[in-house]
Image 1: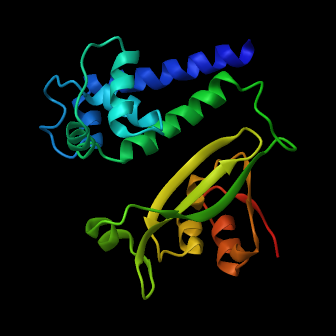
Image 2: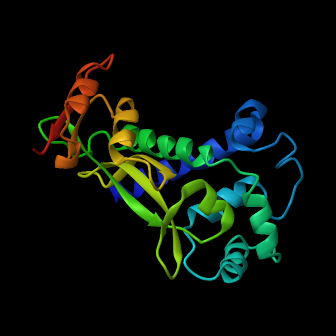
Length: 225
C-alpha cells in the first residue's frame, strides 16, 4: 500500500509539472521548437502529446492513437501524420527535465524507503548502441555502420542507473561514433552527490580518476581494473 501511495504522489508531481509548463510561457518556450507551437487547442495538445509518448507505445501507431483517446473518454482521434507533426514541435529537453522531476519526486516521497549501500546510492554508468530507423536525416546526424549489402543507422546511448532503486537518473543519446568515455567524462557532474558511481574496466583511465576528484564537490567512484 505504501508503494501505491508513493507512486500516486509521483504521478501527481509529474502531472503538475505539465500544468506548470502550460501556464508559464518562459518554461514552455524551453520545450517547444517555436513560440507559435502548442498555442492552438488541437486534438493532440502539449499535455496529451507527452502523455502518449510516455506510454512507450508497442502496437502500431494508429491503434495506439485510437486506444489513447479511448482511454481519455474522447470520441475523437487523430491521424499518424498529425501525431508526427505535433511530435516535431516538442523539444527532447522536456523529457530530460521531466525525468529529473520524477527522480526528485521519488527521493522526496520515498526518502525512508530508498535503498542504499553504506548510506550511498549506487549508480551504474555505461553506454550502449541503439538501432534507429534508416532515414537520410538520421543517417546524417547519428551515422552507423555499413557493409557491401546494406547500411544501418545507429546511435550511442548513455545512462546513469540507480541499481538498487531501479531508476534511470540521467540518460542521453549521441552520434554512433561518440566514445562512451567522452560521454562519461562529460556527465560526471550529473552524478548525485550522495552516490558512488560504478564503472567497468573500459573507463579505467587517469582522466576519469582526476575528473571525479576535481569536481567542485568530489564524486565517489569505483572502476573495475
